[in-house]
Each structure stands twice: as structure tokens, then as C-alpha cells.
Image (cartoon, rainbow, N blue to C red; front, top):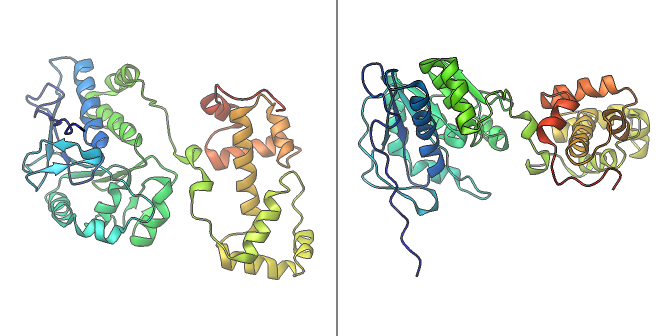
Length: 347
């Protein structure tokens, strides 16, 4: 017999130091929201309050909802309180699986959308975590604002909210009282910034150390896996991309590529752009960087050897391109992302 999920509770005043100067943080819970995102920020704020000490202004945290009962992801039942006045309202994300009817999902969350809109109108700072940005967009908060979300769903957010300036490479974006974050663990990047602003840089730094949270990240670009993104293009561009991917080490020769498909260079560029919105060279560079990332993560090959294997004889040119795509120089990327179970070089 499967046991009923344990009831999760969050006492008001979490984070201690809820006296004068305490920052009031409300987390908006709703059906199907990620339970870890409901409690992730409050838990880090609790650590920060302990680090800061009992005499420092702390954090008063509450989990709120316009509903009487909320069941989060995994069937976790949440103890919620009615919405009240807060300084910061945090909107967690939810599971956005392939095939999800997003319109229907958002329609069922109209009470939450109305609450977000009302809090923003009252001057409350509003923060979304991951795909919680779709709720902010539904509430009209992202129009004419810069925003981010998980890199996996950034294109969808831009499509649904054309008035937003979506920045898929950024971890945290704040624009006139509205903050959006990238996927999942980016909630900690936001929380550390919040701690830094409220409790100071020393407390934020120490909290990051205690919690083993990276406080030096600046972009979600290194984490992007293009294989998980929808692949654009029709039959022609797919064939061109396949040929480029199979010959990463060869010099890029547009004329030879066009000859291989029995078209002019002008026609090749036009048809490829019509189907994908980009150039064959841009695709080739993405594929080369993706292959280089894999080699840096899984082998001990030198940067020069990796560069040569993806078509660059000049390691400096390769390093500049790699940094432009990932935000890291090759050696720094290897140090941050190499796998401990990597195979021996050459295998």
C-alpha cells in the first residue's frame, strides 16, 4: 500500500530575524508547482539568517495561495496561507513536459495570474523561477521588459510574449521590479543576489559556501544542449546540416557545399535561411562547439588537439569562438565541466 504524501509545512518567519527590517518574502504555491522551488529559496534564506546572526535583519517567509489547498509536484500537499502584503513575491515553476497543453494549464491558473497582477500593481517586486515566467507573461508583466527562463523554453516564451525581450543566455534578469530566472538551480543565483542586497556580500558569500552553491555563475549558455531543442528546417536544410555535421574538421567552403547540392551559393544561403533563419556557417560553428564541449568534458586531449579535430588550426581563433558560444575559454570550461568518469584519451 502506497503511503499518502507527507504534509509539507513552512512556518511563517522562516529564516529567523523576522523583527524590524526583516524582508517579507511570499512564495506563491499553486497546483502542480515544483515543491523544491517552493522551498528552495526559503531554505537558503534560513541559512543566510543564521550566517548573518540573530541581531541582523532577517527574512519573514510565507507560502501563500488564493486557494485553500494546494498539491505540488509529486503529490506533495502544501500548507498555505492566504495572500498578504509582502516585499517580494516568488512564483515557482512547474513541469512543462512535451505535449503539455500550455494554454489549458495557464487557464486553470487564472486565480494565481490575477494575484500576480494585483501584487505587481501594488508595487510588490515579483520574481519567477524557471517556467514560472509563463505565469508572469500571462499576467502581462513581461511586455516591454527584458526576461529570461529555462533555455529549453526561451523560444516558446518569446513566441507567446512577443512584447518581451527574452534573453535565453542569462541566469537572472531584473527589469523595473520584475525578475525572471533560468532553469531550476538559477533560483539559488537569484536568492544569493537577494541575500547580497539585503544582508551584504559577506553573508551571501558565506551562505554560498555553507550550501555548496556556486556564486560565480554568469550565464546558462554552457548548459545548453542543442540536441534537446526543436530542430528547425525542412528537408533541404536538414541535408545540408547533416553534411556539415559529418565533416566538422573540413575547412568551410561555401562554393563546394553549394556544388554538392547542385545549387548556387546564393540559392543555398537563401533556402537555408528561409528554412532555419540562419546561415550554414552559424550551424557549423554551433556543431563544432558542441563537439568540442564533449571532447573537453570527456578526454584529456589538449585544447590545440580539440581545436584541430573540429576544423580550427589556430587555437586562438577556436578559443575566441568557443568563449563567444559558451561564456568560457576552453580550459576554464574543462575545469568546470569535465567528467570524472571520462574515458582515456583516444578511445
